[in-house]
Image (tube, rainbow, N blue to C red; front, side, top):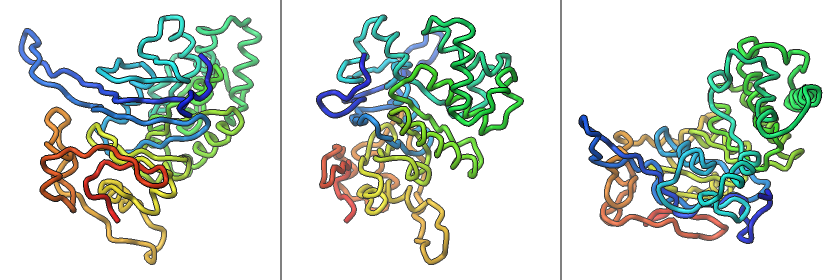
Length: 329
């Protein structure tokens, strides 16, 4: 597969993707319901851009990411990479796909085998997908460590001998080892201190420019994605509720839930502080989502129509999309 955009202009394109998990009970594991983790989600990611995906815990962000990478099978829908449907790809195509699509995990320590030397952790994808001599492999590991700002002389050490930020750099070096085109960063900086977060984000943007990478950047809040993302998608309870250019979305959110997330961002001075919007109640269960708009039980602007009719993700001006019967003005 070639890592170039399809005729639609998207490198990665999801159409009506669903991922349901069965709820089982009893000794016979009888299915009594479904958890609708991802429920009819459609969006695209352009080659060379960073698409930020935000939402509360349990909204389906990470599940969607793993379905996009075919690490979890989709219940329904279509996922295209460079114009080809990866859900129907054969084993040979999937092997090639694994080289072009990689992931950076949230936990920089838990994602690295503590019994492996750093050179083996970074070199593992190369051993699986490339035929290289030990000398070539070691040279490539040195190159990758220097590329992510690590001292290559420390490649014979174990992960616990590195700081959290350094361990995440090891994870990034491992992710770019095969020269991929598309990388999912699943809460890649959430476990790091704020100052280290900035360093890792700057590194990711530097690598994107040098290597021509495309990112899906997943985070809980909008404050982090603003620094790195070209466009942002907001998820709530398995649904995409708003998509738009980052600056436009920050300047004027159209969905009430996006407005809530923006109000939660800490402001540097009292002059720029606005009243924070506090949501009432807890996030509903994806096993039993509300009727109509899934956000309506917590929405401060709810109307009767919201309770009975589910809004569709509709296109607005300036390439904005919003799933709301009464978008904010």
